[in-house]
Image (cartoon, one colour):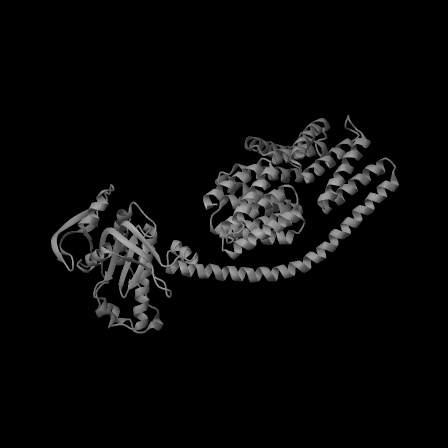
Length: 578
């Protein structure tokens, strides 16, 4: 299965999950995994395990979700898949916060946000920031929670992601309800509901109906409206088979029927719904919600003077609370171990990123990846590229007047400035040889406008070199030589045509370019003049195929070029702005 086919399948799985078709999504993901299972583990495997984790998460099967997300993260770390590393940390943070381990939740989410910020991934930033807001909400730090939700909403709006907008809008509504702003909360819930309906998100629609029912029941005391919303929520939750959601709704319905102000007041029906909620929560092991439900049903039995039953449920709730408290102690011990492991992992990740950055400074990133995958030698042919050469005038004479330290410092300043220009115009630096600098447009990534890019890069490069100021630290020795030499000048040459490119050898790899286009560009530089850009007739024609009113070519006439014979050449200049 190709990467494109896997991506198409993953998109289909995501769509099925968002519409609540969990069985279909799981089956499709498992079929996809069976196809790639015998291949070396890479980003495809990580993405499939993440999708399976998403299915388990939506079914509130947190144990299975943790197992699948950890598997996805391990594969992503192994193959240095940055997106998978970020997503894995984000998903694990989400699950841990759902199981009450808020320390681990914040820890994983913070790692994810760092990755997302570096890559300016607005959608992912919105999701991770929203999950952090949820943790603060569970810690009863509502003002701080609302602050994170609003930040997340801005990310989602900037990224034009409707799904996230609906989720975050609902959470903002919930925050306002907790702060006592009930009507504002309902307004946000309805905004979110409108988006969810457009998206066909059944799980989200059910949750919002449940929330609206709770606000109308608990705070506004409009019980008939509350029941209408709760029944809508229950119908959808049962259709989806989401046990956690069904349990929440049944508990809320039970609480509603315990209100004497409700026209349908019925303690028997309230008991039935709460008991059904307990069975569902025991099945999925949701201890926090289970303790709350036992306490809730004990209140019901007290109101009926069934004190023995009430005491039983109070005792069960206390035992659950002890289990939860005991697990918190274990979690603290695990947290210390986790912090040690995370520190080591972060150290390894930082080292891996540093090594990757160094590699990508030596070779083009695409070439690095091909070498890592085992392709060697690398050999590519390009029909048209534009080669650029720059040389410092009278550099040999200059090098005899200064120390080695000063010489390296000067060359470093010149070449760093040249590198910045190449990055600006999308050229690939190939190498430096002594005081000569070589770059190319159109390789290793094909660029249709290679000549235009090279022309503008050369003009900017000439301007930068003419205005370059290099300061030398006092510890580098005598600097009087600076006053006794002329201004640093460069010659630049350009030519375009076919070329071969690649990496050869086994040690000290170098991405290089060969062919007549390279040799002629070098000749354009060596036969040029100080402070000027010397180009071939072929390069002039290539630039003129693209509308370039800001460029002009001054004929130099026909001159003898070493190894090439007579050639018509030109000096490239920028048209002065009026």
